[in-house]
Image (cartoon, rainbow over the protein chains, first blue to last red):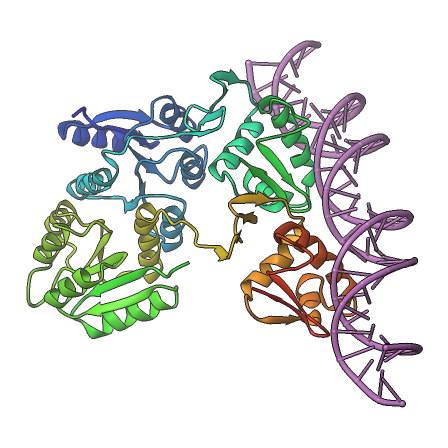
Length: 225
Length: 225
DNA sequence: CCTGTCTTTATAAAATCTTTATAGAAGCGG
DNA sequence: CCGCTTCTATAAAGATTTTATAAAGACAGG
C-alpha cells in the first residue's frame, strides 16, 4: 500500500517540524501549510488522507477552515489546539472534526489517534463527485461538467449547485438555501436566489425555459433532480 | 427517526447514572452493563449503535473486552478511563477504540465526541416518509408520490395532505384543519377547505367523484385513509 | 482602470390563493 | 312525496403573491 499522505496546517514552524519528523519516521508522507488559505489550496489540489489542523491560525479561524474543508473533504481531520476550552472542542467536533487534541500532545497518542482515524476511512475511495443525469460535479476540484464538457460557473453558482446536488430530490426552502450560501443575515433576500437560479439554469439546462434539473416549488423553494 | 442506542459498560453505578441521565436527555436510548461479561452478552444480543466502555473493569481487563468486541462489532467504541497513561491510550486505540476520554470528562465534550463518532457510521436515511395505499409523502423532502410518480402539489395542498396523512384514519374537523393550515383567523372559511380538498382529490384520487382517500364526514370534517 | 461577479431595481409573466356563483346531495318535518 | 334548509362540490373569475429575466449600479481583484 502507498504511504498515507498527511497535510499539516499550522502556523508554528517548530510544531510542523516536530510533526514532520515523527510522521515521516512512521512512514507517512507529509505536506505542510502555514496558513489556512494555503492549506485549503493544497488540500484541494491533492486531497490528503488526513489533515492535522491547528485551530488557532492567524489568517482565518480554524473553525472556518474546518467548515470550508468539510464542504467537500471526507477524510479524517484531527484538530490540534492549545485551547482546552469545552466550547471549542464541541464546536470543532460538530463542525466535522474527527478528533481534537490539546497541545502539548503526546506524540505516541497522536500517532495512535491518526491510526484510529485512518483505519475507518481507509479502503473507501475518496468520492467527491456527484452525478445527476448529464450533470456531474467534483466538490474537491470545484469542476462541473455537462455531458462531459466543463462548465464555467462563478463561485456562488458553484456553491448553490453543490448544495442542490448534495440534496438531490429534496425540496430546499428559500430560507435554507439563503442560510447555507449567504448566511443568516440574508434570510429575506429571496431575489438573490431567483437571479442565481436563473443563471444556473442558463448554464446547466438544455432548455432554461423548461428546466428539468432545478424545479421551482412555488412558495417554498427549489428542488434538484 | 429512531433513537440511537448506546450501551454503557462501567462498574461504577454513579457514572452509569450520570451517563444515563445525560444521554437520555439527548434522545439516546441507553442500555447498561456493570461488568464486561454482561456487556458482551448485551452487545451480542442486540448490537447498539455505540458502546461506552470503561477500561478499568473488575472482571476482565477493558482491553480484553475491547478486543473481543472488535472481533465482530463494527460500530464506534468510546473508551472512558481514569488512566491518563499514554500506553493505555495507544493500546486502546490500536485495539480498535474509536476514541478515548479520561475521567473526569466533560459531558458536553463526550456528547460531541459521540455525535462525531456516530456521524460517520450512520448513513441515516431520514425516516420521514409516510405511506398510505398508493400514496406516499416525504415530509422532509416535501415530495408526494402516487404509484411512484411524483405529484405536483402547491404548498397549501402539500401542507393539507401532510396533515391528513399524519392523522390517517382520524376525523379532522373543519376547525382543526383551518387552524393548522391557515391559522386562527380563518376558522370560518370552510369554503377554503372545500376548494383545496377538491384540488387534492383531483390529484391523488383515481376517481375524484368517488374518493377513496379523503372521505368527507358531513357536517364535521374530513378523514384520510 | 478594466473585468468579472455580486447586488439591487424594475417589470412582465406565471402560479397560487381567495372569492363568488351555482348546482347537487342529504336530512327532516309535515 | 314535497318543500325547506344545510352542507358539499366544482368551476371560474378576480386578486394577490411569487417567480423569471433583463439590466443597471456597486464592488473587489488583478
